[in-house]
Image (cartoon, rainbow, N blue to C red; front, side):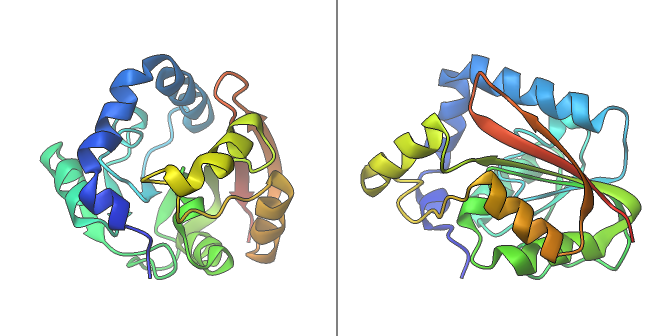
Amino acid sequence: MAKIEAFEKYYLEYEKWFEKNTDLYEEELKTLKSLVKNAKNGVEIGIGTGKFAIPIGIEIGVEPSSKMAKIAASKGLKVINGIAENLPFEDARFDFATMITTVCFIDDVLKSFKEVYRILKQDGFFIVGYVDKNSKLGIEYQQKSKKSRFYKNATFYSTDEIIRYLKKAGFCNFGKKYVKKTNLSFIFLKASK
């Protein structure tokens, strides 16, 4: 079952984090924009309230939290209720997909990555943004997770673990990029089929 309880209850706090941490958010967006460039026809898995989708030109996403989905829809995004492990799209539909700070809330990472691979066109690309469990931020979040509304049920992964899952799902042509200022890691890769 998707780990959405905190996002249903504390969705306003989620929005406030971006207001309080503008510098970090802007740095993450800068990295995403540099990876997406001018690509169109993208989807965000775990679109949340649209904080990442809108600035990088994504118009559609999947979100299991009805509260978050409602906010994203109010911003003009097409939001489909669903989970990463069972994406409601036909094969080879999108040119690219993003999953930003979502992987730690997914129940079956391998199945979700296989689903992303399935919905991408030949040579489409996938961007995974996550908190590496071995990074300074990852260690801090894990230490404070029991007290955190959002991260108490999260499962953090290392870059090596994420890459292993991606390879098992069929992805290749890896290009790693990291945001040093935020400790949020980004992996950019192609879906060569």
